[in-house]
Length: 312
Ligand code: SF4
Ligand code: SF4
Image (cartoon, rainbow, N blue to C red; front, side, top):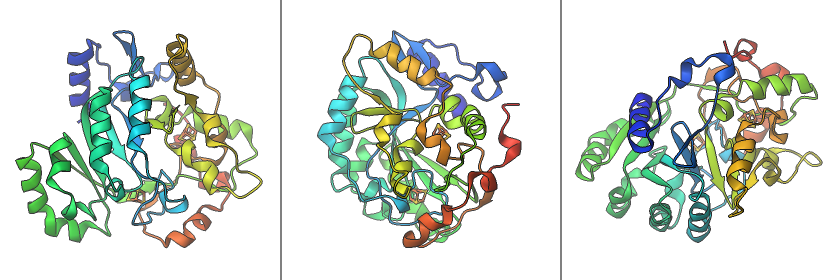
């Protein structure tokens, strides 16, 4: 799938595709420049809603621990239009939370299309509400990525033929993404060890290699996790999540500000409470949403997979 994206990027932007996973240590990079615009390696994301209808213990958007929030299609359109002057992603992923909880997903899809920020729209869903997804939504998608966990597998398998038929009828590429294990994502206690925070950030593939860039309420973020981390912290550790992002603007300096933001090797405020891509691996598990936050109340030092703190 990734080489597909690279081929498409090459065709679309004239970028010489490089093997992102195999880069030497000092060559990790989370963007390219083409036609005067910044492009992420594969995709960028918007969050249709922040909340979810299930509670995965290691959800990397912290959906079970954050307040219900629904993105406003008009704000999404204005953010994407502004950003698209300096940024273009071949793929835009609509994620959440669970995006099918958005009450007007069609308006959101129309906003994304109208912005012209991408060529290809992918919706990422846990599939629990897929049977109710109207044809109008199917018709707007290029790809549907189905997250399959041990707990929803049986139900999805029961409906899979129907889902495959709908996808085929609407020309939607269906991607089945089974997850058995997740890496631990957050620590609500964090760490006071700034050297450890730097190491976690430096080896964070989301921010520095995969380019999991997210557009949220007028701001651009180098990873989705930093949007949600302040919400799961106890007072007095809470802070304004926007401090970790870059305000989207039409300033003539915005392109260079965005390049600087994406290139800096200074950890974000959120990194102190995050495992990046270096959390210990453990089996996927559903928990009670009310207990989700407390499952993360352990110091970072106990949760790190120290073998992952190296780019080699
Ligand atoms: S399905 Fe699980 S991982 Fe996906 S948003 Fe919901 S809680 Fe998070
Ligand atoms: S908060 Fe920091 S460590 Fe966590 S994903 Fe974002 S950049 Fe990586």
